[in-house]
Length: 258
Image 1 (tube, rainbow, N blue to C red):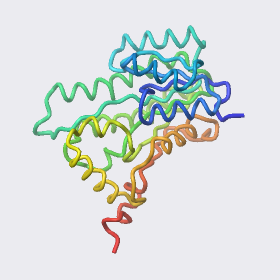
Image 2: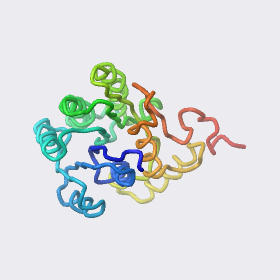
Image 3: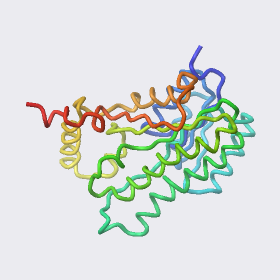
Image 4: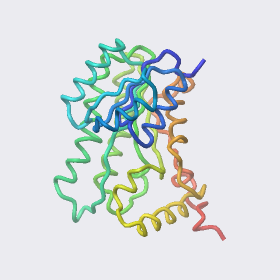
């Protein structure tokens, strides 16, 4: 029997990257999966890929009206939720000197405001014993240039994992977070159009990671399964950093080895 057998699980941003890998993992573990994304065509392709039992719902996390419709669809189809992986998020590169209000709002509307109110809206349909997993990042730990708004948004997500846990304890719902490190997803290709620049980035990041490579989305998905399942039943308000050692043992990276 799978670790999520019989459970109803929501994955926001489940049409690519870590979200899609997690959707595959949840299906394998026996969950009844609901995935969201902003592109209906991509979502339909994902539904066909995952199987006809998967419910694919177009939804933009930045839209509170979309979140209302999403909750209504889930309740109508399944009566409630046992697991939610709040994974949808956006990035962007700009320094504090150059960032515009539009850049800031785009990131915070999805990663902070949208996430906050989505959790508020799913809370009433979360069943006792449920688990919510938030997708944070290692970005707030590293102080990298041109990531101020993004890093700030992910620091808020980490804080939410703690405070949501306190709020939802009365419902017997656990909240934890995963903080991924560099992961091979399509987002990097979309944000950097110069192939030489992208290649240089990949090499630089791999050399800065003690394990010496980027993660695969499936490696993140396995950690999400753990946090979503009863295997992590004594974890509460925690953040699991999954970054190949970049945060915990940065001095072991290839660039520092003799």
